[in-house]
Amino acid sequence: MTGDEVLLRPAVASDSGGVADVWLRSFGAALPTVSRAHSDDEVRSWVRDVLVPRHDTWVAEVGGAVVGVLALSEGWLDQLYLDPAWRGRGIGDRFMALARRRQPAGLQLWTFQVNESAQRFYERHGFVAVERTDGAGNEEREPDVRYVWRP
Image (tube, rainbow, N blue to C red; front, side, top):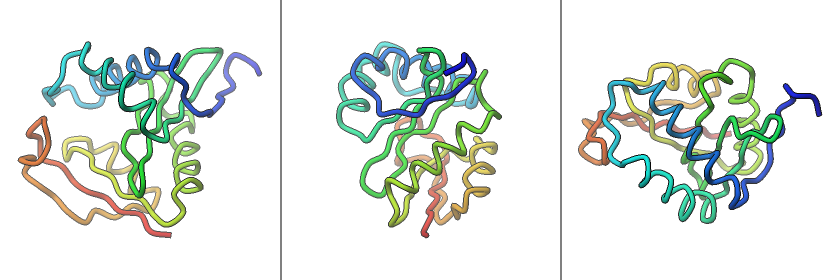
């Protein structure tokens, strides 16, 4: 594998720090106007104790470094974050193909309404917006939108 080759593989416990780093950098870059509901330390604990061990979590790795994360649960795409420096290189497309293989009956997800690039990405991959809320149901209190993909 050369330095720029991206490997998608299941996450293991030792990936938790890299996954949290990617999540924090990506959230900050994509959603600068959204106030996070949890501190960096709380995010790191959640990744270590919940996301990696309890979800179908995958990482994109380049040269031993985590540059992306995908987390699934039954019928849901729970998390899809890429290191900002690695956006636009097809990793998200590869993660979507993987998600569809792992959840062939369909997927749904939530994203914030201010995240227009995420909405365009999901729509390009066949997701349809089915619900918009004022954010009262999420921890950030940020208006969001639920997307659904059916094969």
